[in-house]
Image (cartoon, rainbow, N blue to C red; front, side, top):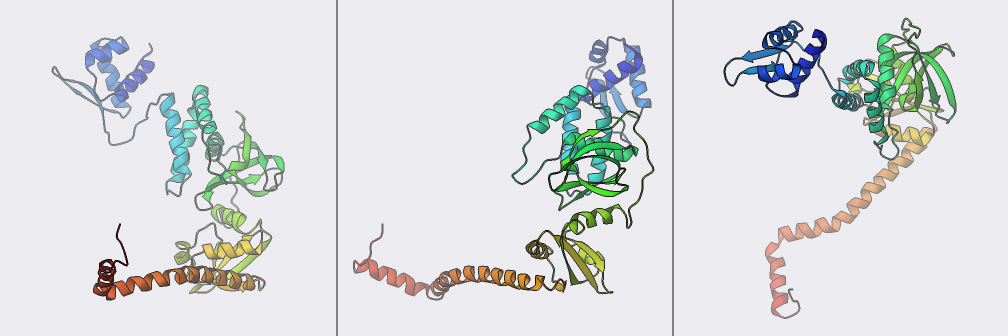
Length: 356
């Protein structure tokens, strides 16, 4: 066994259980004590903390170091980490970008047999009704392409169901829509313009071994602003603008990013722009904003807002009207507990009532 292969094998053994005796390690690696010590020193030179103790209960143990050294994983462990990273990257967790970088590194070295396991997990995983799951391998491949700045080709299904082939320069993966959906911001080579793609609609991704490298372009206003505009207002037939009290910085913590775009209107007020396929969709988004709004445009939206507001008021009033008799009876009982108990006793005494 070559020394480098033996050192990796030693690392795998040390990671598999808490402590090993020198004799057990030597037997597993088929080396003598002196060679084992040299291999342990090689691991230490690589940054691993390997502690040793002498005596009957002594042995070797992999400890905690000052820095994170390379980690050796078997196939099952690598697949498990990849699945966990995909789940972590698909949340509103602040480390989503870090999870994608780690996923790209694992995807780069994942052997074919482990890729098949990852594909089997995806096949056996179901999404809730109305939700479309992201292909784990597509997400990993796109993350790698963004990191390495290489051109990719893929099949894409548009919002209208039309299929197309795209060649793009991938710029950034962006988690939006309240942490529910991944988007790819990219430069479309054939259309010579920036585009935003839903990752769950991307299939048959291809990256050549000699794929063309590119220098990343920056869309006007930055990638985050471009994606926000692309998914909240640009693709929709109807738009509405509202005035909101507060600065953009203050409102950003209150208004979900997927609702619309916030822009300064004055020193103390901001403008919220939303988009939807129908005017009723605009009403729903306005309710999702969670803040006081002043409609600026379009005038046609005003009657629908009033209608929905009246409908919500009636819904609340209906519940209140059902609870009022119950609350009245409860209040009367609390004000005159003896009288209530007295009537009950009298009823049982004169035989007009029975207790079971």
